[in-house]
Image (cartoon, rainbow, N blue to C red; front, side, top):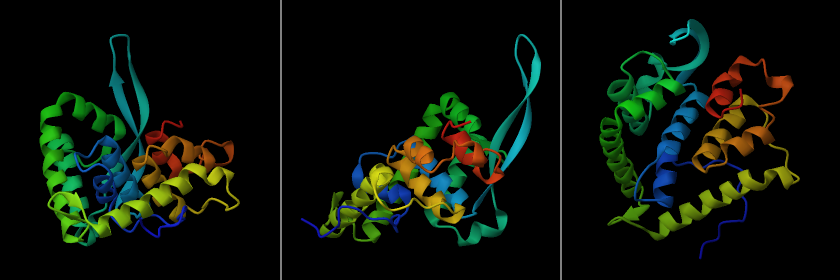
Length: 220
């Protein structure tokens, strides 16, 4: 047993991939990748921008708008090693370009599933090593410290899942809701939390800072 409360309002201190690893040590899924990227957007390490691309189909050629992510060069040296590995994985193994959209990522995974799986496995090993370094796992199993951390993460997940019915007001500032949404994606609650925060409401529809969140959470 741990002394973790039923609800925790603050996001975990651990990297999203470490949080996911403590819950499911067997592997890291696409939601872990997305959550890690969205947290980098929230902290300013990845910049977002709207871009127009020319798409040619059998019927015709037309322009579409996409939301792209691009690493911020000035922030690279200060990044967590796990984030550096993830960006290198996606922009190198899959993308190779300066900017990637969600569609680029999904298409690359479909086209090169073996390359993606191999790169993700390498990242998984780094995440496992980080968890061990923090004393959260030993010999592939959670330690007492790791179990306590997992219970805290679950208390935060309960908060995200249920805050629509709680008296607490949800965070509204960009600097606050960014990490909340990132971890909500990790916990499979991204769509629900985004709607609770009103990201699909007309009042915020034109806010460019929300473009990447709405696109990645299918709220457009």
